[in-house]
Structure formats: structure tokens, C-alpha cells
Amino acid sequence: MKQVFSFSEEEACEDPFLQFESWYRQYIESGASNHNAVFLGTASAKGQVSVRTVFVKEYGRDGFCFFTNINSRKAMHLAANPRAAMLFYWPVHARQVRIEGDVSLLPEEKAAEYFATRPRESQIGAWASTQSSVIPDRKHLEGRYDLFNQLFKGKPVEKPSYWGGYMLTPNYYEFWQEREYRLHDRITYTRKKDEWLKERLAP
Image (cartoon, rainbow, N blue to C red):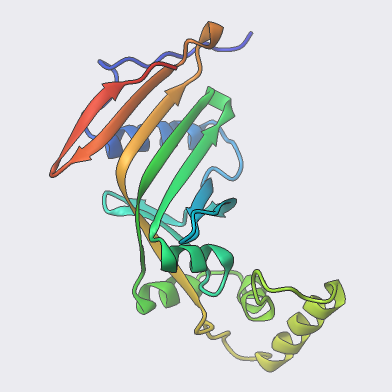
């Protein structure tokens, strides 16, 4: 039988980060894979919206960090319009968390520090892929991978200059809990200067 969850204002922490941490830890403990996968929505300067899945590699009170090619489509969007939205969807508990905020480029040393922890194959893949650009075929991509694999043979793989990280600093959270009859629980937090305003929304 499907477990039924609920989420009330009384249960919700006053601090949205602590509430996120609670739900996130519960999802990790469920044993679900790709617990740090998140849908990232960005928009161009003209308002063209695009969504894709990225992995949050670090998070804390200051924000949620992800890494990518800074010549990619998402990076071009963020350069022109440095705001974004994230959506974590956790079906095990029938929950989702929406986060909106401003996005900033992480310091170069932070990106280099994380790049050094990636599997070697992924490091070489970052050199091989000119992310979001048109390429002729799969063979072209695999050829570039083989090329850089040879270039870095027997030595550490350097971080490409066009690879970096971003941090989304939240100004809005929404915690959504599925309920019967589509009468879902929705608790939001909106930043008001140095405080968070907590409210319930109709489903």
C-alpha cells in the first residue's frame, strides 16, 4: 500500500534550508539513485526558456552549486539573464522542491578543486565536448575523446579554461507534498530582506 504523507505549516521549519536538508536526507536514506539530480530552468535575454537536468555537487545556506561548460547554452543564458529555477522531484516520498534565485559564477579555484575530484574519463570528456555546439556525428566526438586521452596520457588532466561552476542563491523555496484528491500541500518561503516569509498556497 502506498504510504501517505502530509506537510503542515506546523511541521515546516522556520528556516527553508533546514527544511530542504530534512527532506533531502530522507530521500538519500530511501536508497534512491541520483538523489542530487535537479531540473534547471534558465531563460535567454529574450525570454526563451530552457530546462535540463544537472547535478548539484555542493549545497549550503549560501546556495546550490553545479558545474558545466561555460560556453554551453545554459551558460549563455546565465550570462545574459543571471536568474534560474531548480526543481528537485522525489517520487519515493511524492515530493518536490522548487527553488528560485540569482546565479553567480563560482571562483576559478573552486571549479578547479571540484574538477580534480571527477573521474579521469569525465575530465577528458570535458575536453572532448564542445557542449551545445553542432557536431557532424558521434565519430567526431569519440575522435576528440581519443585525441585528448592521448594528450593527457601519463599525466593529470588539467581543467579546461571553459569549464566552471555556478551557484544559485535562493530567494524562494516551495515544498510540495502530494495528497489525495489533488489537494496537495504547498508551503512556500519568500526572502524578505534578512527574513523568510512562510505561506501556504492552494494546490
